[in-house]
Image 1 (cartoon, helix red, strand yellow):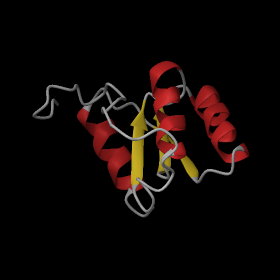
Image 2: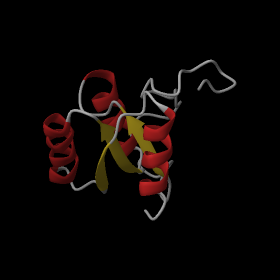
Image 3: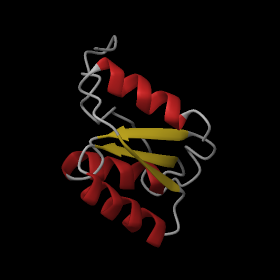
Length: 102
């Protein structure tokens, strides 16, 4: 599923412009980062957490997902992990529903 900007729903990265070092810009917001266990998704998770967001790392690679979660929590950021395959509608819906109580 693509949004109106053309980003694939499973890309793991939604472009966010922030001022460097602004830790309050996303305070009180939840950022769900698909593909957040490694690479660009991991970098996005760290960047969003530094901007003040609570980060939900979603990935199918459970071991790396928990490693990224540990990195974020070691830095005292609020973070959660959800194992899900968001390449398919069922996985996206499942991840959204499981993240909703946060």
